[in-house]
Length: 623
Image 1: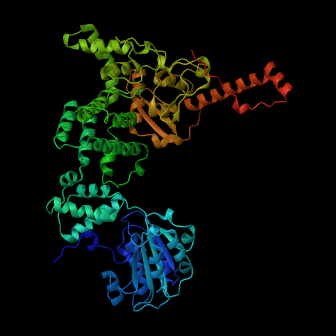
Image 2: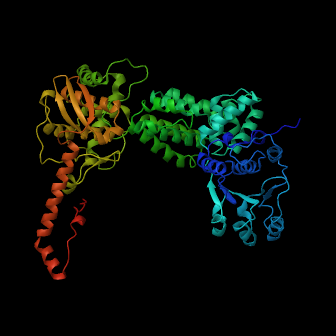
């Protein structure tokens, strides 16, 4: 028996067999069941989404011997002949091969004659946009007022090329690309009917490679069955498509999360043995990092369209949002550098090492714990760090710690460099020393001034009237001193007045700083603190941010605090609102001084001018 390809063998025969396209099936079934039939239908969409298949099902519904309905019987002579492509009253035309006006006129000569077997004579014109302008003119009058026994079914992948006069005479249905999940479920059903073994990961690779086309997916499945010798495996499909396995990306991210350079380079070695395309591997990593960022911001927005929802949600907790953003920017930059490097593998390894050793600027947390760390709390590590450094200082430098001392000296020099030069902290140990200092370690041998780093300083006007932004959110101006108060030395002394001063002193960055800026004090005790977070910031808040704020406070008060953050409507002014209020007041003062200036008044009177107060803003000073 001659083998029939899967795309033809499993072509849907009824509306219920179609995958997706519910927005098209609903109006068609309603029209058929209520006998509200149009004389011309136009189906548009990319290749392989079901335009011709839908037209043939519609032809069966119109000519079924049991009557017009959205559920043809499938057993009568008309239904079987249409399915087999030999129904005499279904005239299929390939417009790509019959573009001339003579072909169209010949086709329309028989329109006036009644159908031979069926209820309607149906003209199915595929790729109708390929017809010439003269052919469209010849078709126009017949398409507008055809005989009652004629129906036109048109299909095209490029509706923009159709004349507006043709479009206005048809009911147009735009078929959408299928999602990877819809394709994967259909392929799984097909393999179950074919009684073939498969791996689910392999079907997800085929579904993504099909790019929304079911026909392409079935064609690739035919090829995979032959390539894998009957059992569709993920490794075989990866070799066939020349794309990296999704598991490779997850292994690389796992090694990055564990801060394990040996395992990271070993994973690259295993990948390199299969002669991969590192460009495609980097694209796959970018796609995963994008999904991780969405999962951290709004977990409910992550669907299972790639078959990795549980894995994405799991890995989203292994990285901070700042790290994900840094990794994405490094990978995006490395994508362009990959084409310039003489060795793609070396460039890819350099990119991963860069991700390993760089840390986001302004992240006030200690380095992430490895997967084999004990269960001690991060707050205890923060409190214990000053004691460990003090013991090392008393014992004197050890031979093997000379490198660490050099790192500390490098960290101590960071605030003295020119503004804008120190954008990232390339050394983990130096980064740790700076973070320990920010946590309140005044006895550390690292000498860092308590004033803001030089790359964050600005002129007096900018300090008063400019808000720094972090993570797309506004954070209060850390240099606003108009209402500064003394820093609290004990948790019991905290109130909403000195809470703003404490926030400015700790000066956290990123999303954590934004969350802290929108909190107010609710209740304090010697060992516990309860904050209220503005509900407008709840979308970006998670347990990791609470832990970071807890670390910062524990480092400042030199005691372990139990921090609770509730989401609601703050009863008092948060540091963010206070900073915004100060900015508005200073801007209002600036505008008042401008309007009262004698020179400005003279200009207004002389030229009958008008002052646009909303355009008044401080001039950026350079120097």
